[in-house]
Image 1 (tube, rainbow, N blue to C red):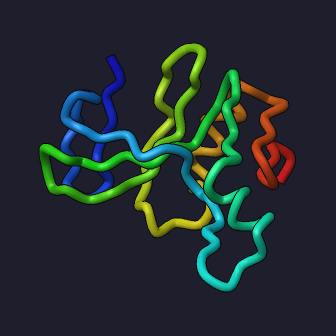
Image 2 (image 1 turned 30 degrees about the vertical axis):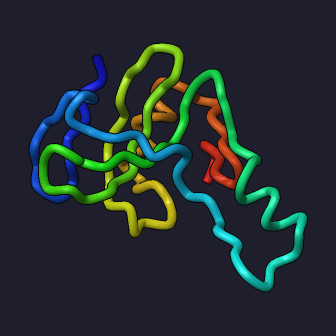
Length: 112
């Protein structure tokens, strides 16, 4: 079972106390965007075998949304951080690179 620590209230919660919200760090497109951009926003998602960034909501707690970095293979959680963050914090990226030296996800690389 996954256990995430809510970055807002500090509670370590099992995944049953949370609601999954899909992939994190998506660029949202709405009215006035091109059909291709809006289609990409609605349907195109990463589905990696390995490190992934996701949105979660502490639904049975404080109710706030947050981001989590975890490995889809080992289920290891590298950390959580506020949903308003546009890039994963460096300490979480460092933990990921320690275990996955060639890590790359979208425009985020281990070498940065």
